[in-house]
Amino acid sequence: MATSMKRHPVLGSERTPLPGSRLVGAADPHERVLLTLLLRRKLTSPGIDSFIQDQAQPHGGAGQFLSREEFAHVHGADPADIGKIQAFAAAYGLTVVEIHPEQRRVVLSGTVAAVSSAFGVYLARYEHPRGNYRGRVGEVLVPEDISPIVRGVFGLDTRPQATPHFRVFNRPASRTGGPSANANAAGTSYTPTQIAQLYDFPTDATGKGQCIALIELGGGYRTSDLRQYFTELKLPQQPSVQSYSVDGGHNAPTGDPNGPDGEVILDIEVAGAIAPAASIVVYFAPNTDAGFLDAIMTAVHDTHNKPSVVSVSWGSAESEWTTQATQAMDEAFQEAATLGVTVCCASGDDGSSDRVTDGLAHVDFPASSPHALACGGTRLESSNATISNETVWNDGPGQGATGGGVSAVFPPPAWQKRFQIESANPGGGRGRGVPDVAGDADPQTGYRVRIDGQQLVFGGTSAVAPLWAGLIALINERRGAPVGFINPIVYEQNIGPAFHDITEGTNGAYEAGRGWDACTGLGSPDGAKLMALVPTPVT
Image 1 (spheres, rainbow, N blue to C red):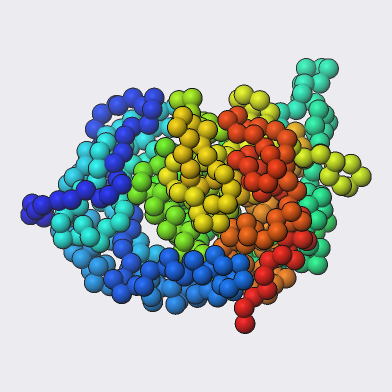
Image 2: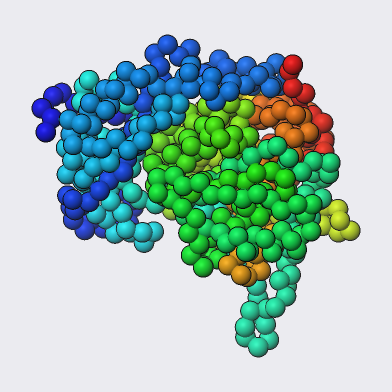
């Protein structure tokens, strides 16, 4: 056992129980805990802020990215710091499971008793309608000698960190009392390729040479479903799909389309239909703050698959995250920007409240990260293969609506400052505006998918993130280089031609209007015109 010494709290690590939780008792002292320590960058690292600011210049930085090997050498964790963490683990009877210097991550394991002693926490068991979990209250404490090194400690608390952002179209009952056999009854549905045609995606690109990373926190897919689905779409080729295990997560279909399988399948089938020649890698991880962060870090720094786009369709209100978690995730997205990786995040399916019942407006994280492309939702109607009407997706209370609003965590980024973005909450306040862009998300004008042997229609902003990821893969192929951090580009360009401005509808606290708004951002894409406005690579 380690000797006692002065301890310091890990900044931003304070936790409280999930509202509605019931304390059951102490966690089993013999239960094994897997946790992640996020370390500081090398002291010699020049920082990446200036690099990202250069990328934020629409014409100056595009195409000037670091390789993953260069990033690890300059901005990874210091070997000496890792050595101190290894000594700390040994002193408290913890096992070092994984070391990722390029990601600044060290994964440790140990018993509840050991980690409680090591990090000065009391771990308890809680019951909650969203799932029982192991939790803690207060801050995480670390010994003084490693306090400057540790940026975050994740995995002590196993509460479900995020929810998937998809909605199943509930077909009306037939005259016999059963579900209607007509998938289009009381609604219109599209294949992803039809959506791409309506949004005029480039037709001379297939995503060849690109890798799209999908982050999944549960569920799974069946190859037979994918094969049949893509065959029915008559794509020029079958997309390559493979799974990647993070922290013990794996492809585990449940057989329930209304569960996490729905999220996984929707992401794969939309991205694969849009960019059929791209490689799709599905990173499965546990639905915890540690699992979510580790999956993002793994995808961004994957030197084998080398994703150029990451699509994230999971999230929760900013108020449900610790400060250390929002900072760590945002740093991961910053790292993606330096590597030329675009991160697309769904903005949520519960309107401006984002499932929080305090009567205030909330935005979804990680979409609210200023280094993510936040994707909102519309209702898309068409006639004769052209868009006839497009409005904000809002099916009414409890039925689903696009997320969006103003961040209470992140200030307005430079590229949004020309817009008057103010919170609808008392006192107003300015912050990062969500979303940036939009696309079809209403289940009543949703996407046809094949899942667990069934043909269903899905909606939700979960469909919009992979839709945009697929479009960016097409743009990357056409450019011959990744576009990377696209947010400043789409905001600084003449936005009129590249977007369908959505001016009708509301998501609760916010209304659509001309230009950017907190329902659909800049609007839905005109893919060909957006392609033309993205600057050519710097040679």
